[in-house]
Amino acid sequence: MRFPMSDSRRLVVRLYEALASGDAAGIDSVLVPAFVGTTADGLPLGLGGTYEGSESMRRDFWWEVGRHFRVEAVVDEMADLPDDGVLVSGTYRGTARRSGRPLEAAFTHRFTFAGGRISSLVQLTDTHAWHEALGNDEAARRLTYDVRDGVARVVLDRPAMRNAIDLAVAEEFLDAVRAIEADPTVRAVLIAGNGASLSVGGDITFFEQGAADLGTLLARMTTPFHEAFRILSRIDAPIVTAAHGAVAGGGLGFVYAADVVLAATDARFVTAFADLGVSGDGGGTWHLPRLIGPARAARVLLENRPITADEALDWGLVSELVPPAELRERAERVAVHLASGPTKAYGHMRRLLRRGATSDLASQLQAETDALTDCGRSVDTRRAVSAFLNNQRPTFQGR
Image (cartoon, rainbow, N blue to C red; front, side, top):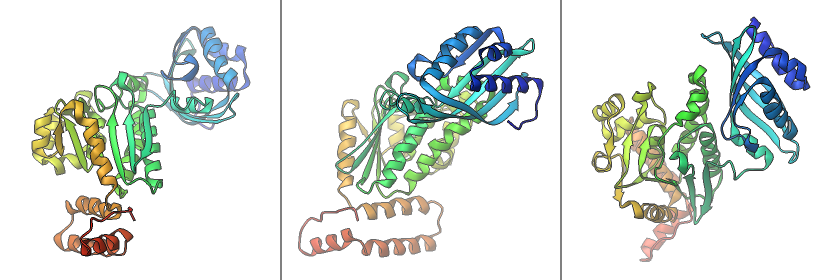
């Protein structure tokens, strides 16, 4: 590890070296007897939690990890913290012993010190990757994904947490979106959430684990989250979002990404960022001024002003209000209907509508001509024109 070496950093390096070699005496030599280790909630095998005492951490956590995984902590960055702590970020790399599956999981470690030894460790890691390595793919899933009748369904599935967003949710969402982009059979997308809410936004309990350097943690989480929205903005398939209950913080990104937003009459929208002292994510600073106007956007962001379902409809944030009991069924019908439409033309419509907000008229007219030219060469357009001339309803194949 090539880092400037303070005494604290040297202790951390000695710990990693002792862990890599399975040196129990070496581990104990750098930890205070009253050491406290806090590991990521959601780790498999019941490994997530708090371990009090150096022996407990070694026996019940590190040795248990070693029983099930061949793994090494590969350090990318090491930084001193204002409270005399040390923050380490990197990647766990290895394999699960039984399944043979590879493990590659990002981590951050925050160390504190007392009396010339390490007194505590807070570990944060991508728990989903650990489950996947063991073969527990479904056990760790935070959203479900399937494709039927041309509709890709992305359903947030953390009902006990009101679909709060942590790093694993962001990464699973990106995985699903990449699958959508790569699948030519997808002709519409439906985004929804199980439980009482679409999403309350960021998982505060997850943020607390990275309190020593929350900025780094937020960057790690929003990177895959925002990449997913970038991909969704460029696909041809139209997107339908079913919004219900609390829709807050980054969870509003699922609303911004959609072409059609169906909202339950009990839905309530709130940015929530100001109360946490953060500036926001999910594309809100781009979408909100365009959807509800700059003045309203400033108020809902700066004052954290909630938006009722009726206001959301009146202001143009959502497309339609639906009784809560009928929301998912209605959203499903709309998505299936769109999946039977002219997908290539829909893609051009989506892009033209987005660029229209910043394009001058001449450029937009040229873009419309270019899009029409491309559509005119498609199978769907030729079939639709023929059907119209023969007084028939067109059927579209999405190409």
